[in-house]
Length: 189
Image (tube, rainbow, N blue to C red; front, side, top):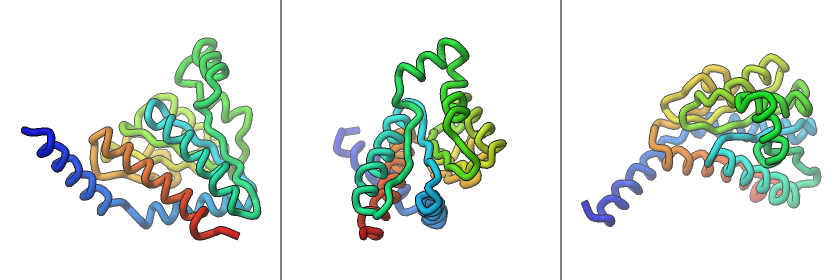
């Protein structure tokens, strides 16, 4: 197979996945973020690997980009960006605790937790979702068709009909941009 053939096959699969995005679930997610913004609730974003980077990107887009055009700022934070705290928690407790221990410090009932995961089974994400549900937070997962435990736990599970890491992570980032640009382009003051 030539690189051009492979690229075209990949792009065809990407377009197919874009066309299958669950827009009703994305609309529900935007509504959750609108309510959190209105109520001044905290939004917690986190993930592992590429999903950690995407969480940071969404926090920037909401915390700066969307907040700059709204009359009121988003209260949004990522739990994977404080390397000192993250590694201290992982070292002193367990890596499974790196997000739940931070939520214990910050989260309140009515806040929102959002995490993406291709597998949906990362122990640190699952543990954070279990704790968040017990504390009456709204939980949102964006996973591949593998679903995983996160999809079972989430208040709003968004399941993407693919298992390819690259395409699933591309769609997670696309959803994050849909959220941010809904506020940036449609809600400007």
